[in-house]
Amino acid sequence: MRDEINLYLKLMTDIKHRLNFINLILGKNNTTGSIETNVEFCCLQLRKILELISLSSLVMNKSVFEKQNVKYEKFWNSRLILQDIERINSDFYPKPIVIDIENSTTENRMLYDMKDGFLTKQEFINVYEKCGKILHNENPYGTKIDYDYYGKQIKIWSEKIIFLLKLHMIKLYKGDGFFLVYVYNATDNNVHAIHYPSPK
Image (cartoon, rainbow, N blue to C red; front, side):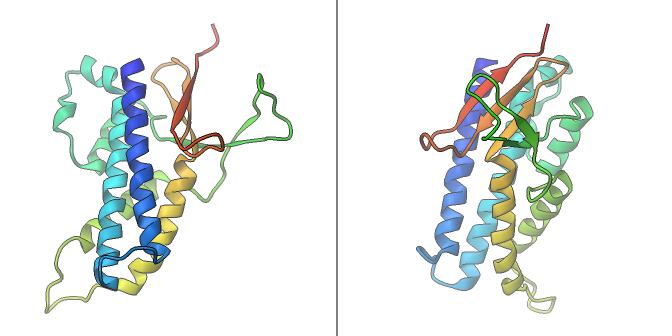
Protein backbone atom coordinates (compact mmCIF):
# COMPACT_ATOMS: atom_id res chain seq x y z
CA MET A 1 0.00 0.00 0.00
CA ARG A 2 2.98 2.34 0.51
CA ASP A 3 3.74 2.40 -3.23
CA GLU A 4 0.10 3.09 -4.05
CA ILE A 5 -0.30 6.01 -1.64
CA ASN A 6 3.01 7.54 -2.74
CA LEU A 7 1.86 7.41 -6.35
CA TYR A 8 -1.53 8.79 -5.30
CA LEU A 9 0.15 11.77 -3.61
CA LYS A 10 2.24 12.37 -6.72
CA LEU A 11 -0.91 12.49 -8.86
CA MET A 12 -2.55 14.90 -6.38
CA THR A 13 0.52 17.15 -6.60
CA ASP A 14 0.21 17.17 -10.39
CA ILE A 15 -3.44 18.19 -10.02
CA LYS A 16 -2.43 21.09 -7.75
CA HIS A 17 0.06 22.35 -10.33
CA ARG A 18 -2.54 22.24 -13.09
CA LEU A 19 -5.12 24.03 -10.94
CA ASN A 20 -2.50 26.70 -10.28
CA PHE A 21 -2.00 27.19 -14.03
CA ILE A 22 -5.77 27.65 -14.43
CA ASN A 23 -5.85 30.20 -11.59
CA LEU A 24 -3.02 32.16 -13.22
CA ILE A 25 -5.12 32.45 -16.38
CA LEU A 26 -8.32 33.28 -14.48
CA GLY A 27 -6.51 35.91 -12.43
CA LYS A 28 -5.11 37.43 -15.63
CA ASN A 29 -1.58 36.87 -14.33
CA ASN A 30 -0.79 34.86 -17.44
CA THR A 31 -2.24 34.42 -20.90
CA THR A 32 -1.91 32.29 -24.01
CA GLY A 33 -2.65 35.33 -26.15
CA SER A 34 -6.43 35.37 -26.59
CA ILE A 35 -9.65 34.67 -24.70
CA GLU A 36 -10.35 31.66 -26.92
CA THR A 37 -6.99 30.00 -26.40
CA ASN A 38 -7.09 30.82 -22.67
CA VAL A 39 -10.41 28.98 -22.39
CA GLU A 40 -9.13 26.05 -24.45
CA PHE A 41 -5.97 25.82 -22.36
CA CYS A 42 -7.99 25.79 -19.11
CA CYS A 43 -10.39 23.16 -20.46
CA LEU A 44 -7.45 20.97 -21.46
CA GLN A 45 -6.06 21.28 -17.92
CA LEU A 46 -9.46 20.49 -16.40
CA ARG A 47 -9.83 17.43 -18.62
CA LYS A 48 -6.39 16.20 -17.58
CA ILE A 49 -7.18 16.93 -13.91
CA LEU A 50 -10.31 14.78 -14.12
CA GLU A 51 -8.28 12.03 -15.76
CA LEU A 52 -5.77 12.26 -12.91
CA ILE A 53 -8.58 11.98 -10.34
CA SER A 54 -9.93 8.85 -12.01
CA LEU A 55 -6.44 7.35 -12.38
CA SER A 56 -5.64 8.11 -8.73
CA SER A 57 -8.78 6.18 -7.75
CA LEU A 58 -7.55 3.34 -9.93
CA VAL A 59 -4.16 3.44 -8.17
CA MET A 60 -5.78 3.00 -4.76
CA ASN A 61 -7.77 -0.01 -6.03
CA LYS A 62 -4.95 -1.54 -8.09
CA SER A 63 -4.67 -4.76 -6.08
CA VAL A 64 -8.37 -5.48 -6.49
CA PHE A 65 -8.15 -5.07 -10.26
CA GLU A 66 -5.07 -7.32 -10.36
CA LYS A 67 -7.02 -10.12 -8.67
CA GLN A 68 -9.63 -9.87 -11.42
CA ASN A 69 -7.00 -9.80 -14.17
CA VAL A 70 -8.24 -6.43 -15.42
CA LYS A 71 -5.75 -4.78 -17.78
CA TYR A 72 -5.81 -1.45 -15.95
CA GLU A 73 -2.72 -0.22 -17.82
CA LYS A 74 -4.95 0.07 -20.92
CA PHE A 75 -7.51 2.30 -19.22
CA TRP A 76 -7.72 5.82 -20.64
CA ASN A 77 -11.35 7.01 -20.64
CA SER A 78 -12.18 8.57 -17.26
CA ARG A 79 -15.90 7.86 -17.52
CA LEU A 80 -15.26 4.17 -18.14
CA ILE A 81 -12.59 4.01 -15.42
CA LEU A 82 -15.08 5.38 -12.88
CA GLN A 83 -17.68 2.83 -13.93
CA ASP A 84 -15.25 -0.07 -13.57
CA ILE A 85 -13.90 1.08 -10.19
CA GLU A 86 -17.41 1.66 -8.83
CA ARG A 87 -18.37 -1.86 -9.85
CA ILE A 88 -15.64 -3.19 -7.53
CA ASN A 89 -15.50 -0.52 -4.80
CA SER A 90 -18.63 1.63 -4.51
CA ASP A 91 -16.83 3.96 -2.04
CA PHE A 92 -13.92 4.72 -4.39
CA TYR A 93 -14.76 8.39 -5.09
CA PRO A 94 -12.91 10.97 -2.96
CA LYS A 95 -15.07 12.05 -0.04
CA PRO A 96 -14.52 15.73 0.86
CA ILE A 97 -14.14 16.25 4.60
CA VAL A 98 -14.49 19.20 6.97
CA ILE A 99 -12.65 19.29 10.31
CA ASP A 100 -14.43 20.83 13.30
CA ILE A 101 -11.40 22.80 14.49
CA GLU A 102 -13.01 24.12 17.69
CA ASN A 103 -13.96 20.68 18.99
CA SER A 104 -10.93 18.74 17.73
CA THR A 105 -7.68 17.83 19.43
CA THR A 106 -4.43 16.50 17.97
CA GLU A 107 -5.39 12.98 19.09
CA ASN A 108 -9.10 13.19 18.30
CA ARG A 109 -10.22 15.03 15.19
CA MET A 110 -13.91 15.68 14.61
CA LEU A 111 -14.54 14.93 10.94
CA TYR A 112 -17.69 15.66 8.97
CA ASP A 113 -18.70 15.02 5.37
CA MET A 114 -18.83 18.17 3.27
CA LYS A 115 -22.45 18.69 2.28
CA ASP A 116 -22.14 20.63 -0.98
CA GLY A 117 -19.96 22.87 -3.11
CA PHE A 118 -17.69 20.07 -4.40
CA LEU A 119 -17.60 18.18 -7.69
CA THR A 120 -19.97 15.22 -7.47
CA LYS A 121 -19.58 12.02 -9.48
CA GLN A 122 -22.36 13.08 -11.86
CA GLU A 123 -20.84 16.53 -12.32
CA PHE A 124 -17.47 14.86 -12.96
CA ILE A 125 -18.87 13.10 -16.04
CA ASN A 126 -20.62 16.28 -17.24
CA VAL A 127 -17.50 18.46 -16.93
CA TYR A 128 -15.33 15.75 -18.50
CA GLU A 129 -17.57 15.61 -21.56
CA LYS A 130 -17.99 19.40 -21.86
CA CYS A 131 -14.24 19.99 -21.68
CA GLY A 132 -13.71 17.29 -24.30
CA LYS A 133 -16.04 19.02 -26.77
CA ILE A 134 -14.17 22.32 -26.75
CA LEU A 135 -10.84 20.61 -27.51
CA HIS A 136 -12.02 19.94 -31.07
CA ASN A 137 -12.18 22.62 -33.75
CA GLU A 138 -15.68 23.88 -34.32
CA ASN A 139 -17.43 23.17 -37.60
CA PRO A 140 -17.69 26.51 -39.46
CA TYR A 141 -21.23 25.52 -40.48
CA GLY A 142 -22.24 24.20 -37.07
CA THR A 143 -23.05 25.69 -33.66
CA LYS A 144 -20.47 28.20 -32.49
CA ILE A 145 -18.54 27.56 -29.27
CA ASP A 146 -19.80 29.80 -26.47
CA TYR A 147 -16.47 30.96 -25.03
CA ASP A 148 -18.20 33.28 -22.54
CA TYR A 149 -20.08 30.30 -21.08
CA TYR A 150 -16.90 28.25 -20.76
CA GLY A 151 -15.00 31.19 -19.28
CA LYS A 152 -17.55 31.47 -16.46
CA GLN A 153 -17.86 27.73 -15.91
CA ILE A 154 -14.09 27.13 -15.69
CA LYS A 155 -13.93 29.13 -12.45
CA ILE A 156 -16.89 27.22 -10.99
CA TRP A 157 -15.54 23.82 -12.06
CA SER A 158 -12.02 24.44 -10.76
CA GLU A 159 -13.36 25.67 -7.39
CA LYS A 160 -15.53 22.57 -7.07
CA ILE A 161 -12.51 20.36 -7.76
CA ILE A 162 -10.54 22.20 -5.06
CA PHE A 163 -13.36 21.64 -2.56
CA LEU A 164 -13.51 17.96 -3.56
CA LEU A 165 -9.80 17.38 -2.99
CA LYS A 166 -8.67 19.99 -0.42
CA LEU A 167 -9.15 17.52 2.44
CA HIS A 168 -10.65 14.21 1.42
CA MET A 169 -11.05 10.64 2.53
CA ILE A 170 -10.16 7.60 0.41
CA LYS A 171 -12.15 4.58 1.54
CA LEU A 172 -10.16 1.40 0.95
CA TYR A 173 -11.64 -1.80 -0.36
CA LYS A 174 -13.35 -4.20 2.06
CA GLY A 175 -12.70 -2.66 5.45
CA ASP A 176 -9.00 -1.83 5.15
CA GLY A 177 -9.71 1.55 6.72
CA PHE A 178 -9.17 4.84 4.98
CA PHE A 179 -6.63 7.54 4.16
CA LEU A 180 -7.19 11.17 5.04
CA VAL A 181 -5.49 13.20 2.31
CA TYR A 182 -4.45 16.81 2.79
CA VAL A 183 -4.01 18.38 -0.65
CA TYR A 184 -4.09 21.94 0.64
CA ASN A 185 -2.89 22.45 4.22
CA ALA A 186 -1.65 25.29 6.39
CA THR A 187 1.74 23.81 7.35
CA ASP A 188 3.39 23.55 3.92
CA ASN A 189 2.64 23.26 0.21
CA ASN A 190 3.03 19.47 0.06
CA VAL A 191 0.34 16.83 -0.18
CA HIS A 192 0.07 14.54 2.86
CA ALA A 193 -1.89 11.41 3.77
CA ILE A 194 -2.62 9.71 7.10
CA HIS A 195 -3.83 6.10 7.27
CA TYR A 196 -6.61 5.19 9.70
CA PRO A 197 -6.96 1.38 9.89
CA SER A 198 -10.30 -0.28 10.50
CA PRO A 199 -11.04 -1.09 14.16
CA LYS A 200 -10.18 -4.70 15.05
